[in-house]
Image (tube, chains in turn blue, brown):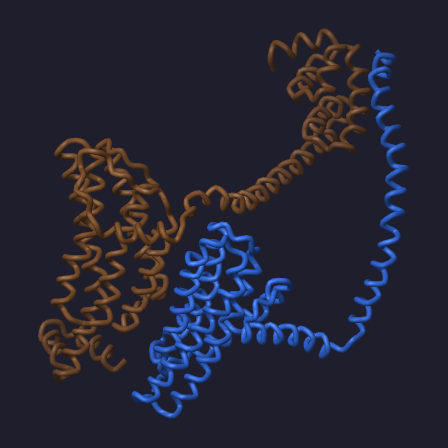
Length: 234
Length: 329
């Protein structure tokens, strides 16, 4: 029995030998990454140097990256910077700003402060996710977070319009102020839609841009309308 | 414990070969029960080998085959090890299931993609056709099985409803306006589609769930148009005209499509009656639920504000307190 067991185990021994012999070329392969790992080490040194820098610089660098993306939204020149290195800091910042600005309206004069804030959040994120899924379903070639990033950054004109509206509302809430707000919101709504379309349209199949743009239009329309109908509590 | 495992037991050579191929734990349990001297050593060898093999592959079979050897040589310790492995195996399986679920979720997008395979022209023509009833009920009408249009119409309806709620100053105590609007629209779409599909199944109508969803979804186009107009232009006569015209046409379109796919008088009456009543009532509900409030507000602004409350005070004194509290609020 023991002999038979040995015989049976020999193929395994051979296999283990083979695996050892295979290990040698693998080591050779490892030596190839060694060359790149030296460059990795250099990169590592670069990263290491960022550990030394003051926290202020790190934060400022990130803020500068976010700021440059804001500028891309203001001048939508079909640049791919928004798509290439996406981040969700900008959208979060804009979303919170918008929600805070919309806070304290007449609609939530009693105990409705919570839902108002949550509503903006839900609309922005849920809406972006739906638009993204829709564009994926229609055969778009954009990744999930790229689309979220673009849609989030393109809220910026509407956030700016909200700030303007609050300033105008300080002056008074007559017909003139309404007309001013209407113009501002309409312009920023068009801007948002145009900017996001400029970024997103390239990733869509040619005949279907209208189908992708419609939910985007609806999304910014709802947000714009929320901004327009905002009235501060007395 | 199959008969096959018993025969293997009498022939250890065969048992080896089988076990190397990844035999089940059942065999080894049998071995443990009636171990003869010959298979005793073999199990030890097997155990050793499987240990090595396990380190390489870490297969579930290997862990279970170990049980026989462990049970004999190590007793409780072996059972403990087995238990640990089983737990680890279960954890691994659960993790794998989670990962595959997450992956499936993303893969499901591909499954849904055929339903969103439309051109803008097709959507436009289907939107227009949703308001044009076809007078052909002898031959089954074609119903497009597509979800882009219905989904977008439901979202449009959500937006319009949100607009109506805001302009009518609807206050929802529990939950947000957004949640209510989404719940109402999706609830109606999915709920009534399911109901119609269930009824169609009962009366043996030739329609699939996808077609039901598409039919009812495009039927909401009329609702969207009517509500969008009447939430902005508060004019009762206009609403009733539009209700009968747009709502009626889109309902008629759905009814004719269902008629053409149902056989028999009673089934047709049941199916189409249910659908048309629900569809027309839903429009009325959406309009008046978020519109009448304006009328009441206007009325209360014109008249003396406490007048309606005094009537309550005469009957139920407790309510006066509530009412006055509400008013002061």
